[in-house]
Image (tube, rainbow, N blue to C red; front, side, top):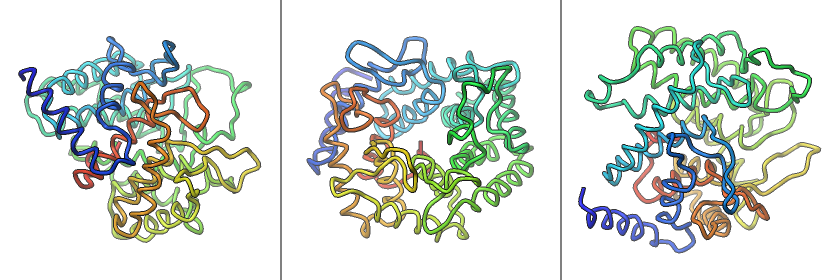
Length: 356
């Protein structure tokens, strides 16, 4: 691609973006995720604060692969494809012999699922790229996810001690957030047809288990919890959106309605409800809610969508990325990715293939 063509793509992104001035600047966010948090190894950093960067985060690298492929699909700029390829190689390099991918010495099935979704998104629909897929390692990653969920074992401590872990923490439990694993499982069912029957069976069982946590429009964090971690609630709803099954439509609608009911006047959404812990107005949930509203009923939730975009706009940093919350100095990678995803859906129509 010639240099002027790349500039034209950037202008197209900008022109689409300024249709509504309350929306965060898409071009600035794109520049940030393509440079500031992208490491030359192919891994993506968790956050940036001034010249300081967080840690290379495998789960977020998985999100990054899928987002780069989405941007490539929309704008045809080959640098997105190059970054996605580099990140896929990085993820393969992070895999344990068992197929697991760790964070802080712990193997999370959720993180592994996000990484698998990114890897499969890179190879999907292109026979040339698919010929170079490391099928052995990809299937090992799938097997780790499959058998962990089958055993209802969301983490593997890999010999680490539980003493310093809060085992009530949402990400350490067999909780509602795991419904989002249905995305990578569905992709795997299509990619590896020989595994389709057993994978589809696991998806069905996972839905049955997690839907017991749904009450009055929201997902409790896990089966022994009476509070809602809104990030997890949105993850669960996103899993159902990707499956797009008739029997789940009312649950998705109720979830969208509940998010609209709890939205604050400034467009934000709190990180938790029905909890004794402090509430914070966070950007990740706010961006997730926009995607849920766009999929469910764009017209009905148009005011909610605009208010949430306005809140995210207020959190856009001079560097281009989105701060995690009000008062934070951390420019957050996944918040920025979710926001880009929401804007692309807003501008170009909802496409659940690219739900990150």
